[in-house]
Length: 340
Image (cartoon, rainbow, N blue to C red; front, side, top):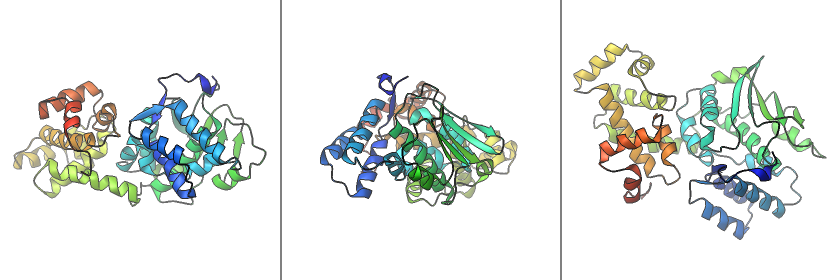
């Protein structure tokens, strides 16, 4: 369908406004009207995707001679610009796991079209869209460029390149900027957008030395310390492993114990010696993280429920009422924001 047929319920995360602000800062562009609009939109969790497209068009109008603007915007991406997906990537052990979470939780960033990932020969292919691709050239370019920059950031492999990139856009008069940016063949006029990565990248470890990821890690570490008063090494390891599997579903004791190199029975015995039960530790951890996430106004309740491993927001809300005696929304309204 044409881009202007997007429905009012089609959205992107408002955290993407930070990406445009970062681009303006990088290029030292004043554009006060655009900056004011970005600051206003950043106050909410989401914005209509048509608003996102309009922001990109406004930027293009301000830079009419920039013929590969989407690539330059995408090059400025940082983990916090993709909102909750930055949190999810932080607790991934490998790039493959991070990318699987990206495809699974993509609606937390936008709900325009689903993304799909899978092997194809010696390549790992990530594709999104339909033959009636309902996006815009600028938005597609930002997404693909941002994905490649994120892959390099997550792995610390700044030389990592795709094998091939498919773009739905019509081939521009000068394709040099695309070849230079991606360092691989770019096929224009393709039915859908797609990135072909070497299949071997699935096993690359995630690099957590990025300053933005480190900041998120420190934020979560504080919540972990508050969840259990003891700095017992086993409990600390248990907390880390629970958090590591939360985003992939219910953190069953058997799965967590295996990640710790223990049998489920040995884990239960170790907790019993400390006067604890596994479910108690899990609930204490979720409680601490829930309050930490609720202090971040950019995170919606469905996103928080997802990050805590709950299948539905209603299940998270019931659990929170048991912990605090009130709904998460009511608690959020009274609680100070993060950093205050």
